[in-house]
Image 1 (spheres, rainbow, N blue to C red):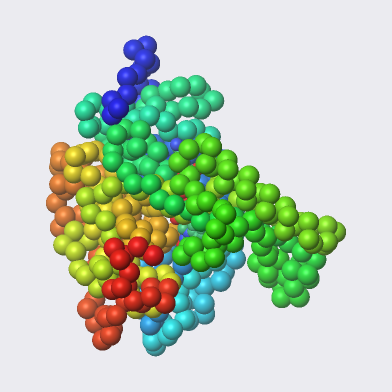
Image 2 (cartoon, rainbow, N blue to C red):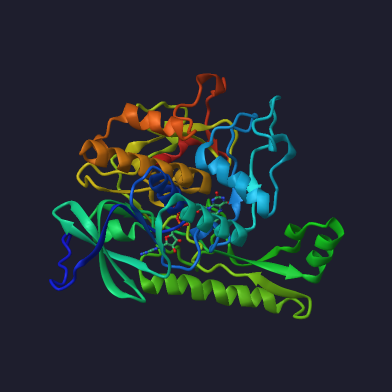
Length: 426
Ligand SMILES: Cc1cc2nc3c(=O)[nH]c(=O)nc-3n(C[C@H](O)[C@H](O)[C@H](O)COP(=O)(O)OP(=O)(O)OC[C@H]3O[C@@H](n4cnc5c(N)ncnc54)[C@H](O)[C@@H]3O)c2cc1C
Protein backbone atom coordinates (compact mmCIF):
# COMPACT_ATOMS: atom_id res chain seq x y z
CA UNK A 1 0.00 0.00 0.00
CA UNK A 2 2.61 2.53 0.96
CA UNK A 3 5.00 2.07 -1.88
CA UNK A 4 4.10 3.42 -5.28
CA UNK A 5 5.72 1.67 -8.21
CA UNK A 6 6.60 4.11 -10.91
CA UNK A 7 6.91 3.35 -14.55
CA UNK A 8 10.60 2.60 -15.13
CA UNK A 9 10.66 4.86 -18.16
CA UNK A 10 9.44 7.82 -16.09
CA UNK A 11 12.34 10.07 -15.29
CA UNK A 12 12.42 12.52 -12.45
CA UNK A 13 11.70 15.90 -14.05
CA UNK A 14 13.42 17.89 -11.33
CA UNK A 15 14.28 17.55 -7.66
CA UNK A 16 13.32 20.20 -5.10
CA UNK A 17 14.20 20.68 -1.46
CA UNK A 18 10.54 20.98 -0.62
CA UNK A 19 7.38 20.14 -2.55
CA UNK A 20 4.19 21.72 -1.27
CA UNK A 21 1.03 19.97 -2.50
CA UNK A 22 -1.94 22.37 -2.42
CA UNK A 23 -1.97 26.15 -2.71
CA UNK A 24 -4.52 27.10 -0.06
CA UNK A 25 -3.47 29.58 2.61
CA UNK A 26 -1.46 26.88 4.44
CA UNK A 27 0.34 25.87 1.23
CA UNK A 28 0.97 29.45 0.16
CA UNK A 29 2.39 30.23 3.63
CA UNK A 30 4.64 27.16 3.54
CA UNK A 31 5.90 27.88 0.02
CA UNK A 32 6.57 31.60 0.64
CA UNK A 33 8.36 30.85 3.92
CA UNK A 34 10.58 28.11 2.52
CA UNK A 35 11.41 29.80 -0.78
CA UNK A 36 12.21 33.15 0.80
CA UNK A 37 14.79 31.31 2.95
CA UNK A 38 16.56 30.05 -0.17
CA UNK A 39 15.06 26.54 -0.47
CA UNK A 40 14.09 25.25 -3.89
CA UNK A 41 10.32 24.90 -3.65
CA UNK A 42 7.62 23.58 -5.96
CA UNK A 43 4.03 24.52 -5.13
CA UNK A 44 1.45 22.34 -6.89
CA UNK A 45 -2.13 23.64 -7.10
CA UNK A 46 -4.95 21.83 -8.87
CA UNK A 47 -7.09 24.90 -9.52
CA UNK A 48 -6.29 28.18 -11.26
CA UNK A 49 -5.87 30.56 -8.34
CA UNK A 50 -4.21 30.38 -4.94
CA UNK A 51 -6.00 30.50 -1.59
CA UNK A 52 -8.14 27.34 -1.55
CA UNK A 53 -11.22 27.68 0.63
CA UNK A 54 -10.12 31.21 1.57
CA UNK A 55 -10.55 32.41 -2.04
CA UNK A 56 -12.00 29.76 -4.36
CA UNK A 57 -14.25 28.56 -1.56
CA UNK A 58 -15.45 32.14 -0.79
CA UNK A 59 -14.50 31.87 2.88
CA UNK A 60 -13.18 35.42 2.92
CA UNK A 61 -12.79 36.18 6.62
CA UNK A 62 -9.69 36.18 8.80
CA UNK A 63 -11.44 35.12 12.02
CA UNK A 64 -10.31 36.83 15.26
CA UNK A 65 -6.56 36.94 15.76
CA UNK A 66 -6.78 38.24 19.34
CA UNK A 67 -8.03 37.11 22.74
CA UNK A 68 -11.13 39.31 22.79
CA UNK A 69 -9.56 41.63 25.40
CA UNK A 70 -7.41 43.68 23.04
CA UNK A 71 -4.36 41.41 23.00
CA UNK A 72 -3.16 40.14 19.65
CA UNK A 73 -2.19 36.44 19.64
CA UNK A 74 -1.70 35.65 15.97
CA UNK A 75 1.04 37.54 14.18
CA UNK A 76 3.49 36.32 11.50
CA UNK A 77 2.52 36.03 7.87
CA UNK A 78 -1.17 35.96 8.84
CA UNK A 79 -1.03 39.48 10.27
CA UNK A 80 0.91 40.61 7.19
CA UNK A 81 -1.59 39.02 4.78
CA UNK A 82 -4.67 40.26 6.64
CA UNK A 83 -3.33 43.82 6.36
CA UNK A 84 -2.17 43.29 2.77
CA UNK A 85 -5.67 42.11 1.80
CA UNK A 86 -7.05 45.38 3.23
CA UNK A 87 -4.67 47.46 1.12
CA UNK A 88 -6.13 46.60 -2.29
CA UNK A 89 -9.45 44.92 -1.51
CA UNK A 90 -12.08 45.60 1.14
CA UNK A 91 -10.74 46.98 4.40
CA UNK A 92 -12.95 45.81 7.26
CA UNK A 93 -10.30 45.83 10.00
CA UNK A 94 -11.96 47.50 13.02
CA UNK A 95 -10.66 51.01 13.65
CA UNK A 96 -9.30 49.93 17.06
CA UNK A 97 -6.92 47.53 15.24
CA UNK A 98 -5.99 49.66 12.24
CA UNK A 99 -2.53 50.45 13.56
CA UNK A 100 -1.81 47.19 15.35
CA UNK A 101 -2.68 46.17 18.90
CA UNK A 102 -4.83 48.83 20.58
CA UNK A 103 -3.32 50.75 23.53
CA UNK A 104 -6.47 50.21 25.65
CA UNK A 105 -8.21 46.86 26.32
CA UNK A 106 -11.15 46.29 23.97
CA UNK A 107 -13.64 43.54 23.35
CA UNK A 108 -13.70 44.43 19.65
CA UNK A 109 -11.91 41.59 17.92
CA UNK A 110 -9.23 41.81 15.24
CA UNK A 111 -10.84 40.40 12.08
CA UNK A 112 -10.66 41.19 8.38
CA UNK A 113 -13.24 40.34 5.70
CA UNK A 114 -11.50 40.69 2.36
CA UNK A 115 -12.12 40.47 -1.37
CA UNK A 116 -11.45 36.78 -2.13
CA UNK A 117 -10.32 37.24 -5.71
CA UNK A 118 -8.06 40.23 -5.09
CA UNK A 119 -6.48 38.34 -2.19
CA UNK A 120 -5.88 35.41 -4.56
CA UNK A 121 -4.01 37.75 -6.93
CA UNK A 122 -1.94 39.01 -4.01
CA UNK A 123 -1.03 35.45 -3.05
CA UNK A 124 0.23 34.81 -6.58
CA UNK A 125 2.33 37.96 -6.29
CA UNK A 126 3.72 36.75 -2.93
CA UNK A 127 4.63 33.35 -4.36
CA UNK A 128 6.39 34.85 -7.37
CA UNK A 129 8.31 37.30 -5.17
CA UNK A 130 9.44 34.48 -2.87
CA UNK A 131 11.06 32.57 -5.74
CA UNK A 132 8.91 29.44 -5.30
CA UNK A 133 8.01 27.64 -8.52
CA UNK A 134 4.30 27.23 -9.08
CA UNK A 135 2.30 24.76 -11.13
CA UNK A 136 -1.35 25.67 -11.58
CA UNK A 137 -3.91 23.28 -13.00
CA UNK A 138 -1.78 20.37 -11.84
CA UNK A 139 -2.84 17.57 -9.48
CA UNK A 140 -0.43 16.04 -6.98
CA UNK A 141 -1.35 12.35 -7.10
CA UNK A 142 0.69 9.51 -5.56
CA UNK A 143 3.81 10.05 -3.52
CA UNK A 144 6.75 7.88 -4.52
CA UNK A 145 7.72 5.97 -1.39
CA UNK A 146 10.77 3.96 -0.36
CA UNK A 147 9.48 2.40 2.82
CA UNK A 148 8.25 5.34 4.86
CA UNK A 149 10.48 7.84 3.08
CA UNK A 150 9.00 10.00 0.34
CA UNK A 151 11.18 10.44 -2.74
CA UNK A 152 8.79 12.72 -4.62
CA UNK A 153 5.33 12.95 -6.12
CA UNK A 154 3.59 11.98 -9.34
CA UNK A 155 1.59 14.77 -10.95
CA UNK A 156 -1.10 14.94 -13.64
CA UNK A 157 -1.40 18.06 -15.77
CA UNK A 158 -1.43 19.33 -19.34
CA UNK A 159 2.15 18.02 -19.53
CA UNK A 160 0.90 14.50 -18.80
CA UNK A 161 2.05 12.28 -15.96
CA UNK A 162 5.28 13.50 -14.38
CA UNK A 163 7.52 12.73 -11.45
CA UNK A 164 9.05 15.47 -9.29
CA UNK A 165 11.56 14.53 -6.60
CA UNK A 166 11.89 16.17 -3.18
CA UNK A 167 13.67 15.96 0.15
CA UNK A 168 10.58 17.02 2.12
CA UNK A 169 6.92 16.86 1.17
CA UNK A 170 4.25 19.05 2.77
CA UNK A 171 0.71 17.86 2.03
CA UNK A 172 -1.63 20.81 2.34
CA UNK A 173 -4.32 19.57 -0.02
CA UNK A 174 -6.75 20.12 2.86
CA UNK A 175 -7.74 16.47 2.61
CA UNK A 176 -4.38 14.76 3.26
CA UNK A 177 -4.73 13.23 -0.21
CA UNK A 178 -1.03 12.65 -0.80
CA UNK A 179 -0.17 11.47 2.71
CA UNK A 180 -3.12 9.08 2.63
CA UNK A 181 -1.99 7.59 -0.66
CA UNK A 182 1.48 7.17 0.81
CA UNK A 183 0.10 5.08 3.66
CA UNK A 184 0.37 7.75 6.37
CA UNK A 185 -2.37 7.08 8.97
CA UNK A 186 -5.18 9.63 8.76
CA UNK A 187 -8.58 10.21 10.33
CA UNK A 188 -11.73 11.06 8.34
CA UNK A 189 -14.03 13.85 9.52
CA UNK A 190 -17.67 14.68 8.91
CA UNK A 191 -19.16 17.67 7.22
CA UNK A 192 -22.50 19.33 7.68
CA UNK A 193 -24.97 20.63 5.10
CA UNK A 194 -23.36 23.98 4.20
CA UNK A 195 -23.04 25.75 0.84
CA UNK A 196 -22.90 29.49 0.30
CA UNK A 197 -22.53 31.66 -2.80
CA UNK A 198 -22.35 35.46 -3.00
CA UNK A 199 -25.44 37.16 -4.36
CA UNK A 200 -25.90 40.70 -5.57
CA UNK A 201 -29.36 42.24 -5.55
CA UNK A 202 -30.67 45.61 -6.71
CA UNK A 203 -31.02 46.45 -3.03
CA UNK A 204 -27.44 45.54 -2.05
CA UNK A 205 -26.11 47.41 -5.10
CA UNK A 206 -28.08 50.52 -4.10
CA UNK A 207 -26.66 50.21 -0.58
CA UNK A 208 -23.11 49.93 -1.97
CA UNK A 209 -23.65 53.11 -4.03
CA UNK A 210 -25.16 54.94 -1.05
CA UNK A 211 -22.26 53.97 1.23
CA UNK A 212 -19.64 54.25 -1.50
CA UNK A 213 -18.46 50.79 -0.42
CA UNK A 214 -18.45 47.94 -2.93
CA UNK A 215 -18.25 45.29 -0.18
CA UNK A 216 -21.89 46.13 0.67
CA UNK A 217 -22.93 44.86 -2.77
CA UNK A 218 -22.58 41.23 -1.71
CA UNK A 219 -25.19 39.25 0.14
CA UNK A 220 -25.47 35.49 0.09
CA UNK A 221 -27.62 32.64 -1.07
CA UNK A 222 -27.26 29.22 0.45
CA UNK A 223 -27.89 25.60 -0.27
CA UNK A 224 -27.52 24.03 3.16
CA UNK A 225 -26.90 26.59 5.88
CA UNK A 226 -25.66 24.60 8.86
CA UNK A 227 -23.05 26.06 11.19
CA UNK A 228 -19.78 24.47 12.30
CA UNK A 229 -21.44 22.90 15.33
CA UNK A 230 -24.00 21.11 13.16
CA UNK A 231 -26.97 22.86 14.82
CA UNK A 232 -30.20 21.87 13.04
CA UNK A 233 -28.57 19.49 10.56
CA UNK A 234 -31.69 17.95 8.92
CA UNK A 235 -32.22 14.33 9.99
CA UNK A 236 -32.70 13.20 6.38
CA UNK A 237 -29.49 14.78 5.07
CA UNK A 238 -26.29 12.80 5.71
CA UNK A 239 -23.00 14.26 6.89
CA UNK A 240 -20.37 13.81 4.21
CA UNK A 241 -16.73 12.81 4.75
CA UNK A 242 -15.91 14.19 1.30
CA UNK A 243 -13.36 11.47 0.67
CA UNK A 244 -14.81 9.74 -2.39
CA UNK A 245 -15.80 11.15 -5.78
CA UNK A 246 -19.36 9.94 -5.15
CA UNK A 247 -19.62 11.72 -1.79
CA UNK A 248 -18.23 14.98 -3.11
CA UNK A 249 -20.69 14.81 -6.01
CA UNK A 250 -23.60 14.00 -3.71
CA UNK A 251 -22.65 16.95 -1.46
CA UNK A 252 -22.51 19.29 -4.47
CA UNK A 253 -25.69 18.04 -6.17
CA UNK A 254 -27.74 18.11 -2.93
CA UNK A 255 -26.58 21.63 -2.15
CA UNK A 256 -26.92 22.96 -5.69
CA UNK A 257 -30.52 21.68 -5.88
CA UNK A 258 -31.25 23.42 -2.56
CA UNK A 259 -29.60 26.66 -3.71
CA UNK A 260 -31.68 26.73 -6.91
CA UNK A 261 -34.87 26.10 -4.90
CA UNK A 262 -33.98 29.08 -2.71
CA UNK A 263 -33.34 31.25 -5.77
CA UNK A 264 -36.62 30.24 -7.39
CA UNK A 265 -38.40 31.97 -4.50
CA UNK A 266 -36.84 35.33 -5.44
CA UNK A 267 -37.48 37.77 -8.29
CA UNK A 268 -35.22 36.83 -11.22
CA UNK A 269 -34.83 40.45 -12.34
CA UNK A 270 -33.52 41.71 -9.03
CA UNK A 271 -30.66 39.35 -8.23
CA UNK A 272 -27.70 37.45 -9.64
CA UNK A 273 -25.08 35.06 -8.25
CA UNK A 274 -21.90 37.13 -8.36
CA UNK A 275 -19.39 34.66 -6.89
CA UNK A 276 -19.76 30.91 -6.77
CA UNK A 277 -17.83 28.48 -4.48
CA UNK A 278 -15.49 26.74 -6.88
CA UNK A 279 -14.49 24.09 -4.39
CA UNK A 280 -16.65 22.10 -1.95
CA UNK A 281 -17.11 24.01 1.31
CA UNK A 282 -16.22 21.01 3.44
CA UNK A 283 -14.68 21.91 6.78
CA UNK A 284 -13.10 18.74 8.08
CA UNK A 285 -12.54 16.02 5.50
CA UNK A 286 -9.38 14.25 6.63
CA UNK A 287 -6.53 14.96 9.00
CA UNK A 288 -3.23 13.36 9.79
CA UNK A 289 -3.34 10.97 12.76
CA UNK A 290 -0.59 13.14 14.18
CA UNK A 291 1.88 12.38 16.97
CA UNK A 292 -0.43 14.57 19.08
CA UNK A 293 -4.03 15.70 18.63
CA UNK A 294 -5.13 19.05 20.02
CA UNK A 295 -8.25 18.97 22.18
CA UNK A 296 -10.36 21.35 24.24
CA UNK A 297 -8.74 20.16 27.48
CA UNK A 298 -5.48 21.71 26.21
CA UNK A 299 -6.82 25.22 26.82
CA UNK A 300 -4.25 27.33 28.71
CA UNK A 301 -1.65 24.54 28.52
CA UNK A 302 1.92 25.31 27.48
CA UNK A 303 3.65 22.80 25.22
CA UNK A 304 7.44 22.42 25.04
CA UNK A 305 7.13 21.84 21.29
CA UNK A 306 4.73 24.71 20.60
CA UNK A 307 4.95 26.14 17.09
CA UNK A 308 2.54 28.95 17.86
CA UNK A 309 0.06 30.32 20.36
CA UNK A 310 -3.50 30.61 19.06
CA UNK A 311 -6.78 32.01 20.32
CA UNK A 312 -10.25 30.52 20.09
CA UNK A 313 -11.97 32.36 17.22
CA UNK A 314 -15.51 31.82 18.56
CA UNK A 315 -15.04 32.49 22.26
CA UNK A 316 -13.13 35.14 24.16
CA UNK A 317 -10.11 34.35 26.41
CA UNK A 318 -9.48 30.70 25.48
CA UNK A 319 -5.84 30.26 24.53
CA UNK A 320 -4.03 27.26 23.13
CA UNK A 321 -0.61 26.31 21.84
CA UNK A 322 -0.11 24.14 18.77
CA UNK A 323 2.44 21.35 19.26
CA UNK A 324 4.72 20.49 16.32
CA UNK A 325 3.40 16.94 16.79
CA UNK A 326 -0.02 17.96 15.39
CA UNK A 327 1.49 18.20 11.90
CA UNK A 328 3.98 15.30 12.00
CA UNK A 329 4.24 11.51 12.33
CA UNK A 330 7.45 10.21 13.84
CA UNK A 331 7.36 7.15 11.55
CA UNK A 332 7.29 9.31 8.40
CA UNK A 333 10.46 11.41 8.63
CA UNK A 334 10.07 13.63 5.56
CA UNK A 335 6.30 14.05 5.17
CA UNK A 336 4.10 16.42 7.11
CA UNK A 337 0.97 18.50 6.85
CA UNK A 338 -0.44 21.88 7.96
CA UNK A 339 -3.69 23.83 7.71
CA UNK A 340 -7.00 22.08 8.01
CA UNK A 341 -5.49 18.60 8.04
CA UNK A 342 -3.49 19.21 11.24
CA UNK A 343 -4.36 16.78 14.02
CA UNK A 344 -7.13 17.84 16.38
CA UNK A 345 -10.06 16.15 18.08
CA UNK A 346 -13.58 17.59 18.05
CA UNK A 347 -13.46 21.35 18.58
CA UNK A 348 -9.66 21.04 18.78
CA UNK A 349 -9.74 20.33 15.02
CA UNK A 350 -11.93 23.41 14.45
CA UNK A 351 -9.39 25.55 16.31
CA UNK A 352 -6.61 24.36 14.01
CA UNK A 353 -8.37 24.59 10.65
CA UNK A 354 -9.30 28.28 10.44
CA UNK A 355 -7.41 30.63 8.14
CA UNK A 356 -5.14 32.39 10.70
CA UNK A 357 -4.03 29.11 12.28
CA UNK A 358 -3.60 27.45 8.87
CA UNK A 359 -1.15 30.23 7.97
CA UNK A 360 0.80 29.66 11.20
CA UNK A 361 1.05 25.90 10.74
CA UNK A 362 2.00 26.44 7.08
CA UNK A 363 4.88 28.67 8.15
CA UNK A 364 5.89 26.20 10.86
CA UNK A 365 5.79 23.23 8.45
CA UNK A 366 8.19 25.11 6.17
CA UNK A 367 10.60 26.09 8.97
CA UNK A 368 10.58 22.56 10.40
CA UNK A 369 11.28 21.15 6.92
CA UNK A 370 14.20 23.55 6.40
CA UNK A 371 15.71 22.52 9.73
CA UNK A 372 15.20 18.81 9.03
CA UNK A 373 17.06 19.15 5.73
CA UNK A 374 19.84 21.24 7.26
CA UNK A 375 20.44 18.98 10.26
CA UNK A 376 19.81 15.72 8.39
CA UNK A 377 17.10 14.54 10.80
CA UNK A 378 13.46 13.52 10.56
CA UNK A 379 11.02 16.40 10.84
CA UNK A 380 9.76 15.18 14.24
CA UNK A 381 13.31 15.22 15.58
CA UNK A 382 14.31 18.77 14.72
CA UNK A 383 15.86 20.80 17.50
CA UNK A 384 12.73 22.42 18.88
CA UNK A 385 14.55 25.40 20.42
CA UNK A 386 16.11 26.22 17.04
CA UNK A 387 12.73 25.87 15.36
CA UNK A 388 11.02 28.11 17.89
CA UNK A 389 13.78 30.72 17.56
CA UNK A 390 13.24 30.74 13.81
CA UNK A 391 9.47 31.07 14.19
CA UNK A 392 9.93 33.91 16.65
CA UNK A 393 12.16 35.59 14.08
CA UNK A 394 9.19 35.14 11.68
CA UNK A 395 7.10 37.12 14.19
CA UNK A 396 5.11 34.17 15.57
CA UNK A 397 4.19 34.11 19.28
CA UNK A 398 5.28 30.70 20.53
CA UNK A 399 3.90 30.75 24.09
CA UNK A 400 1.00 32.92 25.24
CA UNK A 401 1.89 35.10 28.27
CA UNK A 402 0.41 33.71 31.50
CA UNK A 403 -1.00 37.13 32.36
CA UNK A 404 -3.51 36.61 29.51
CA UNK A 405 -5.05 33.62 31.32
CA UNK A 406 -8.35 34.69 32.94
CA UNK A 407 -9.03 34.02 36.61
CA UNK A 408 -11.97 31.84 35.71
CA UNK A 409 -10.50 29.12 33.54
CA UNK A 410 -13.81 27.37 32.84
CA UNK A 411 -13.94 26.65 29.14
CA UNK A 412 -17.40 27.09 27.65
CA UNK A 413 -17.72 25.99 24.02
CA UNK A 414 -20.94 26.83 22.19
CA UNK A 415 -22.77 27.13 25.49
CA UNK A 416 -21.46 23.85 26.93
CA UNK A 417 -18.93 23.40 29.69
CA UNK A 418 -16.01 21.67 27.95
CA UNK A 419 -15.33 19.55 31.04
CA UNK A 420 -18.71 17.90 30.42
CA UNK A 421 -18.19 17.22 26.70
CA UNK A 422 -17.11 13.57 26.42
CA UNK A 423 -13.72 13.28 24.67
CA UNK A 424 -13.85 16.93 23.68
CA UNK A 425 -16.20 16.10 20.80
CA UNK A 426 -18.97 18.59 20.10
C1 LIG B 1 -18.20 26.60 5.34
C2 LIG B 1 -16.88 27.03 5.91
C3 LIG B 1 -16.80 28.21 6.63
C4 LIG B 1 -15.57 28.63 7.16
N1 LIG B 1 -15.48 29.84 7.78
C5 LIG B 1 -14.27 30.33 8.10
C6 LIG B 1 -14.12 31.68 8.49
O1 LIG B 1 -15.08 32.45 8.54
N2 LIG B 1 -12.86 32.13 8.79
C7 LIG B 1 -11.78 31.30 8.79
O2 LIG B 1 -10.67 31.74 9.15
N3 LIG B 1 -11.89 30.01 8.40
C8 LIG B 1 -13.10 29.53 8.01
N4 LIG B 1 -13.20 28.27 7.50
C9 LIG B 1 -12.01 27.41 7.47
C10 LIG B 1 -10.99 27.81 6.42
O3 LIG B 1 -11.57 28.43 5.31
C11 LIG B 1 -10.18 26.62 5.92
O4 LIG B 1 -10.09 25.59 6.85
C12 LIG B 1 -8.77 27.09 5.55
O5 LIG B 1 -8.89 28.08 4.54
C13 LIG B 1 -7.98 25.86 5.09
O6 LIG B 1 -6.81 26.21 4.41
P1 LIG B 1 -5.87 25.07 3.84
O7 LIG B 1 -4.81 25.74 3.06
O8 LIG B 1 -5.47 24.16 4.95
O9 LIG B 1 -6.77 24.14 2.90
P2 LIG B 1 -7.68 24.48 1.56
O10 LIG B 1 -8.16 25.84 1.66
O11 LIG B 1 -8.59 23.35 1.51
O12 LIG B 1 -6.58 24.41 0.43
C14 LIG B 1 -6.19 23.23 -0.19
C15 LIG B 1 -5.70 23.56 -1.59
O13 LIG B 1 -5.15 22.38 -2.17
C16 LIG B 1 -5.62 22.23 -3.49
N5 LIG B 1 -5.59 20.79 -3.76
C17 LIG B 1 -6.40 19.84 -3.25
N6 LIG B 1 -6.01 18.63 -3.68
C18 LIG B 1 -4.94 18.84 -4.47
C19 LIG B 1 -4.09 17.97 -5.20
N7 LIG B 1 -4.24 16.65 -5.16
N8 LIG B 1 -3.08 18.51 -5.91
C20 LIG B 1 -2.90 19.86 -5.94
N9 LIG B 1 -3.69 20.72 -5.27
C21 LIG B 1 -4.67 20.21 -4.53
C22 LIG B 1 -7.01 22.85 -3.48
O14 LIG B 1 -7.40 23.26 -4.78
C23 LIG B 1 -6.80 24.04 -2.53
O15 LIG B 1 -6.35 25.18 -3.22
C24 LIG B 1 -14.42 27.83 6.98
C25 LIG B 1 -14.50 26.64 6.22
C26 LIG B 1 -15.72 26.26 5.69
C27 LIG B 1 -15.78 25.02 4.84
